[in-house]
Length: 199
Length: 274
Image (cartoon, rainbow over all chains, first blue to last red; front, side, top):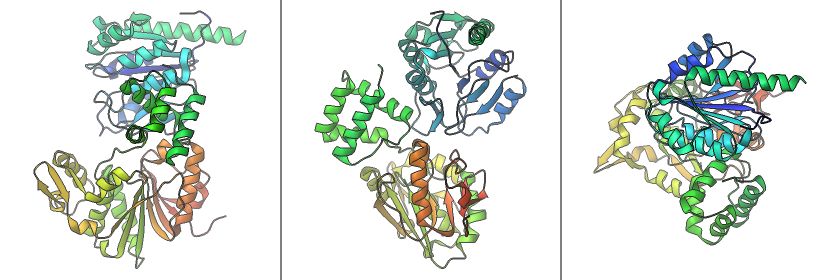
């Protein structure tokens, strides 16, 4: 990682075991985080948004479902709604689509990661966590190819190791870490950016 | 591979001038993803080569056209929407002696047949005409045929049962081998027509416009243009139905409509504006 690199967006993909993992990662992040976070958690197409409000109640950050054309702003966490793909536009707004499933998933992690990589290039941090399929591996690879920072949850610590393993194999990520250390890394990047910004 | 905006602009302009399909106002992230995907699948080295192929090879062009347009749909998608139509819109439609419905961006027709079933169950179908349009002739032909894979009927029936159903879903199609053929009685008041929301004009004297999950693919400028088209088509007091994640809230037309059902994005055009 280049120490002058400025990060403007974090994207996270999780599947089986993801809710617990997300809670652990997000609960202790500061409410004024310098970068917004976009998340794809594989979820039943018929799910209501209830889990979003449960997660929101446990975190200092504001957590919500992404709306169509919504502007992406720091300090907020946007979750892909059930049954929609979430895409990132160059003007840092959300697009939702109903294209067919990718890797049997809608929302798909690859769709979020690939569009975010195109839009944010080296300003992007991509994180793949627990899951029982291989969605996200190709997306993480394209984040890496576009100069972004790539992180995968240590498969040994994941409830389901398939997704982290697939991502490690294809993308050769910058970091492989347990969740607590991913959180510490995000917090230190936040502080570096905060300090640099106030100079 | 990186796709630069000028290259993409050039491709979209070329497609427009050669074939008349205008994707320039579509979500950039969506278009980029689809073009990159086609590039990967076709094993072409760069966008310039892809552009050459699109211009010279009409079969390849049709393929890309299909990639860029949106053809994912299902019967009674979002059952709550159909329930809201039954409860809130049907009583209003009953007050007109003749009802004209424009279903814009109907794709392969599943949601048009759903509406026809609903209208038939509510005893209104005989005084309704549905104009179902799409800009893609291939999907329009499929819609007209009304033949769908039988394996999908189970999940359609699940949706149907939650839409305020008054019968059994199996009453509305005939199974033949692996296909389900929609009942003829559903087709009689549907007019299928080729219409492009981006480049064609409005439909006069429409009582209800249904356009669900099409506008999410458009940028804000194009959305406003299409909302203008719908507004020009709707009679005063007419009904506009959008997709679950679509909203008039950020458009130039928000003051001209009132909510009929906030969650299901059903709006009514005001009698007076301003």
